[in-house]
Length: 582
Image (cartoon, rainbow, N blue to C red; front, side, top):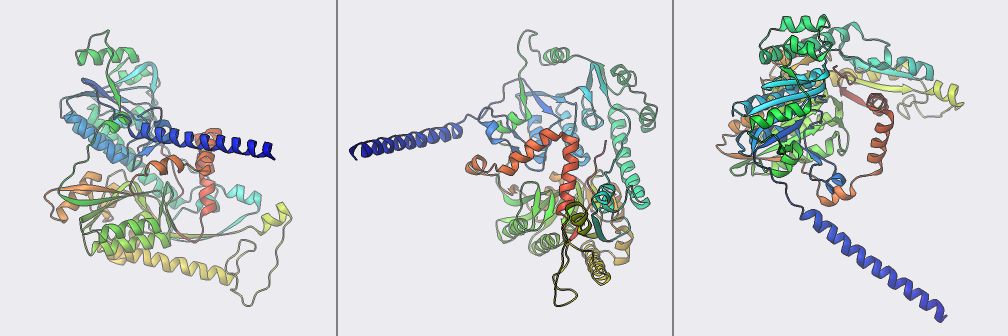
């Protein structure tokens, strides 16, 4: 027995010591992170912006990477705009170096970045752009630079734009899955991947129109930057004239061919840095960590970011949950220190019910203080639904919007269960509609009629919301609705938006409506705190990252599409299925 107690107390003491040491090291760890020095911008430095980074609406941080480097947090789009503006007057920044290989950002986001860079140039500081294999979207931002350079054995993609959709009807047929589909609006093509094997004539028409709008906008801005004309640029693409780096120089799309070291030497000469000295550079992430560009003082304007699919319930990263956003908007409405609200939305829509709830809260808020909406790359279907009652709507010519329409899907999996798995179902019920809709049998004709009626009623309500909010006749709304997608350029012409402009323009408008002489911006949702970041990375995040790595970007995109289709339940106000412009 004495031996037992001896071992027990020795073990207990060891555990106690281990626990105390663990707590000590944990506190030291937290203290080390908390006391981490804020990086300083060196003098005569070059600000490096890697255009291959995704600039979401709000900043994103890889917290665990930040333990090794202060360079882990990527600024949000509006952060980037403000950082470029800050660099314009920063005496330590001599110029900007654009790493221009790829650009995953949308066209509207690219326009905001382009605008900020054009403003930076008025300072007299230089902007150089460089790429080895430069995509068209990367070039779209890069061509605002004073000089654009390519690697001598690199290339510039100059081939025009293409949109490709993925259709899953054949897959569903093979599996014996019948997607029972209901929709309102002849252009409402969100369900086409499930019911067709190619684009409908209506979808082909609308896609052709908005894609050519984007392409024309792209060519016009490029022509202005490179001092040429759109006809010449279009001809270069149509004849495949740009095959090698030297072709891009010959046709004056770029200014020269350089290796990276040659360009760095040229920048040193521009900054009067000795050839043998190290060039001081600062990445946009480090510059973000080193600068507090947010101005305080004056009255408060709430800037609420909403990015992703609109869903029922609470938000997760990449979604706009109605419970979360109703709470955020209500908080801004009830806070007397907030004098105006700017709702920044980047969404292709989602749940009708969630969209209605967010629309309702914004409409109530509008009665008490100005509400201005700013559209990002996409604000369509449910994204437009929530926004249509604002005092003013801002978008860019390259924004994708509209898609005023509704659909619903009730999959019938009975043949799949029986034919592939050998599973059958039977039921007993008290009436013809008892039990509701089910995936285990086909819908009856009566159920189909009820479902289509519900879709038509919701569509009529959507159109009425737009008519009331935009002060338009319902017949006029019907002409531009039908689920049709529009660019911001055409949206201004048909009355779906009020003016062109980015986030800052929307904020200035809100300040003017609230009659504020001085103001500062409070951003929502707030950033995660330390413990959230430390412990918030869940198993699903790790699974998603692993899957993306294993499948590759293109295959993962298809997997995401399948997941989204699988999640479509209830009535939806969504864009036509996700597209990628190449």
